[in-house]
Length: 93
Image (cartoon, rainbow, N blue to C red; front, top):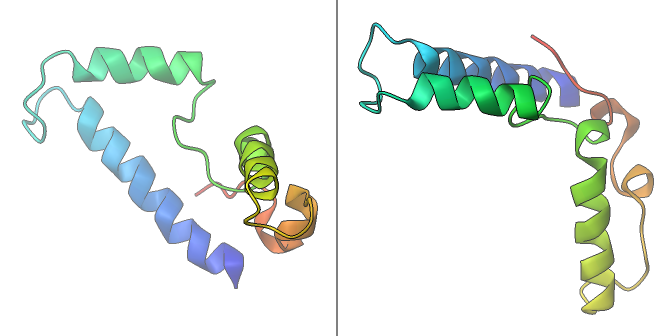
């Protein structure tokens, strides 16, 4: 079920990035946007906003640690404990 929910979001994100990189259309009237997106895509190894636990483990770990340190969570947790296995891998569409 989790992958069925993630797949449409992944597809929408990819469609949005494709529109932003389309220099022939004026979806976003920023002339340097396609060049910036291409540069950022190279910097972030292809995916500017990856979905799934595995590609976001570092920020999730930081979030969980901050939550514990600030008293939001009663115990220290790892991403593997917090998320079901079905959403831990990256879904490609």
